[in-house]
Length: 310
Image 1 (cartoon, rainbow, N blue to C red):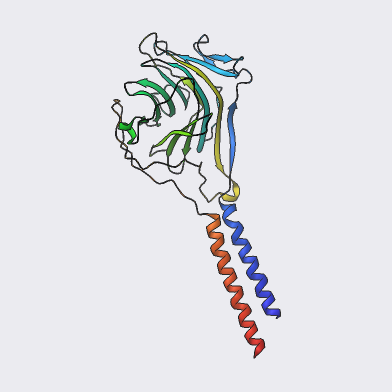
Image 2: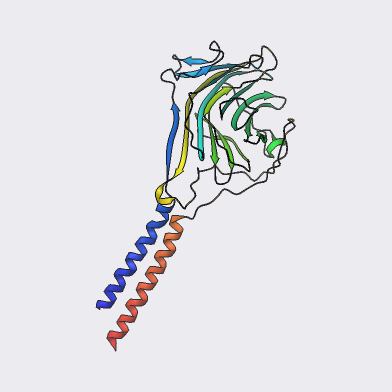
C-alpha cells in the first residue's frame, strides 16, 4: 500500500502541473499607452482651432473636416514601443456631405493618411453612399484599403447613419501582420461591420492619434462634422513567464468573403481569407492530461490490489 500511495501522489502532482501550465504559457500583459474621455482639455494640436476643439459642454472633441483646408488635430506624442495594439474610440457623425470624409488614424509624426506608417479608419460619403473604410500604409509605402462596399470585400454593402454613436476598434496583430477594424453600434452593442487587411510587413514608429489629415485638399465647402470620445490605445506585450509564447491581441471573427480590389486608384495587393491564429486551448489540453492521469492512477491501484490478493 505504501507504493500505491507514492504513485498516487506523484500522479496527482503531475496532473496539477499540466493543468496550470497552459494558462501560464498564454499569459501576457496589456498596457494603456494613451487614454482620454475628454472630461478635461486633452491639449491636442490643431491647425484649425475654430473647427477642431475640445467641447466642454459635450465632454467630447468636436471636429469639422473640410478637405479644402487640410485641417487636422492630433494627440500629444505617444510612446509606442511596437508590437500588437488596439485603438478604440467613439464617433458621432452629425454631417457628412457628398465627397467629405472623416478620418481617425494612428501614424508617425506626419499625420498624413497617404504616408506610412499609418492605420486609418474612415467614414465617407461617396458614390457608394455612406460607407466605412480601413486604410493602411506601411513603412515601405505599400497602401492597402478595404471598404464596406460589396465590390470591395465581397459581403453586403454596409452603410453608417448620421447622429448615431459608433464604437470603432482597430486591432493590429504583430504575429500575423493583420489589421482588423470592427464597427459597433454603441447604443445596441450590435456589430455593424468588420473586416481586415494583411499588411505582410510589420508596423512600427507610430506616435500620434489624429483626425483629419495633412495634405487633404479638395472641394471647398463640404464638411464632415461631429464628435469623438473615449479614445484609447493599448499595447499587448509578452510577459516574462511567457517570453517564448507569441502573445496576440484578440481579433474579431474574420469573414470568409473573397476580397476584390476597390475602384479607388491606389496600389492594391489582393488579399486572401486567412484564419485567425488560434491558441492551444487550456481547457482541452487540461482535460486530456487529466484523463491520462486518472487512467494511470486506476492502473496502479488495480495492480496493487492484485498483488495483495496473491
